[in-house]
Length: 151
Image (cartoon, rainbow, N blue to C red; front, side, top):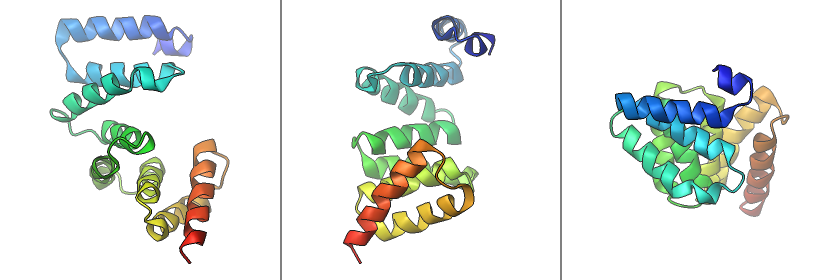
């Protein structure tokens, strides 16, 4: 936490990698994947590695944060949208009112051209928190366009 607070991400990542090597604690592997993905500008460089790590983690852990993260990546990068939605639905079983998870689900529905479903989910999110978040605003605008095409 201290490394993150002082913006020393590489030291944090190296420490977690060392802890993973020593303990084989699978949760550390997930943290490595998240940090690697979040800290690199060109996400495509680490995409396959991050997906592989998270899939491995989720064979052992039933963790909604990791399920949503992996699901969103699979959807957002058009890798496997249906599989991504399954991960997100698993996350939503544990935390059904989590707005980030609902946003991920709506984005997946949009990517499958299920515009009405995506719109209904996103409308609830936007009504609740507005459009201050950049991703929420982007998703909302895309989903509204999609819905308008299918009226």
